[in-house]
Length: 202
Image (cartoon, rainbow, N blue to C red):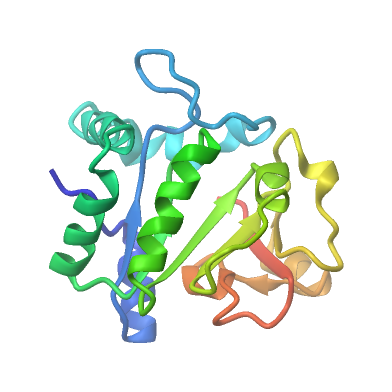
């Protein structure tokens, strides 16, 4: 099983920046067994790209379920480190599909990041309160708060890195947001010196 992969956007991003960007995905919103993965999802459920297209193909879905199962095992940290080394990844987007379903699960990713300080990890997330309550975050980890979940009211747009979805690139630029629609690393603190991450609806 491939624990980390490259979707089309990350392949394009890797080529653009000359780095190896991989993603880790688990089921969007809810697993086939009814386990709620995206615990703070709201409006995003309606337009989530990870619930349609190739993500919904019958030959793709099982891989997301298997990765979710892997996250619950005691050896998840070790097998992820092995996979990242094997693929020679430099950036990991944690969850092109899914979210942190518990703090315990989130802290597993922090352990991975702490053991791999040269690798950079980033996530879009609706779990704003969970992140804000943390006492510390590894310096090689970045969060972008999504503005379409149950906790969007907790986003302070002046100080929190956050995303907004726009109808057009023109609207995005007028609002002063950095476009990350085509190249995903423009969402991260390493390539975006603003708190504003814009995506054009597709």
